[in-house]
Length: 444
Picture (tube, rainbow, N blue to C red):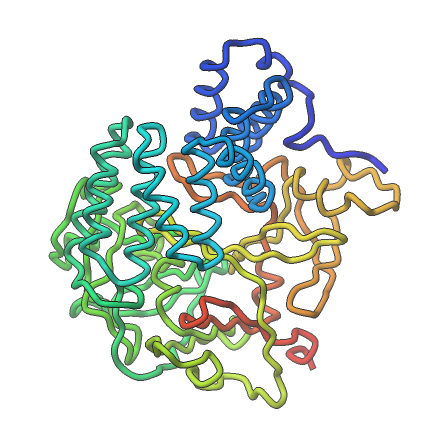
């Protein structure tokens, strides 16, 4: 079997291990901020091999988390936390939040706030926890404090504008900060030139076309639209600012939804997972329709959503998922088993399925079949999810796209349009879980 040189490989990165520790740490930090996650992970791994200990465990944990290797990251952060480092404690707080243990996450994050090294990032996590539980005023306060603690001027400006937007949203006692009212509605979907699904919505009295994305951690609006509708803008109106808008999706409406302002093409904006995670919905790309409903606190997922697909014919299967939060962002990661090992994956509703070299090396670690993998542009992997399996072709890439300037996790694989078009997807905001419909039944 041909081994794929991934993040733990040594080719091309050995030159960093003899440099002073502070320079190595600065390089890792800069690479993570630039979205060069694979290179950052290689440098962090070399650093840990040269000088194993709490500091290198902290940096390796950060790089592993950003590269989607959540369990590995948690293990290194735990080792560091047991040695008394704030970075390790913050890493454990992130892991607890992703597993839904919010009280534990808050307690750990509050400990990390006390250290200057982790103060800004811990405040972002505390803001996210407050936001998820409907306390928008506390979320805004934490984001403002994070802006003051941030050493990066651009990041500070983004946090300050997010703080102002969050503080504008009416505070609630529990549940998501974005409140929805109304009755369930079925919305037809359009497609753009790339095949991305588009839903027609209303912002104020204006009809808008919004692209649906389960991979985007923040929903966005174009500055041109914001100017035309007359919304109040916080921060830079061209890029990086925020606006709070009333949004209606059919018969479901929210009086205040925060959007980040960002240039977009062909549409008026994008509905990311931060907003979609607060709604109940069922998505059938095959039938080009989206069913949405308000969340119903205290009710199980099975009682909430109108049945787009007959449960007697199309059985539902829950998927192992994690919801990662940071400030006002929310990110959906699945844990499919590809070939022999589970990896973290996002869902792309219109692009191809793809996998990084590192993700592939993990997926086939127990595969004895000899294959010249590096010579291939695509590779077919058995994909197991929710009790079912199917073969999907993945485009092999050196690394998947890391968002520059973002704290979002870069998954090891992305389930693309072939996955999304063949399975009906259903989201329960009560359980924060995704379910799917058997693809074999759908194709009959």
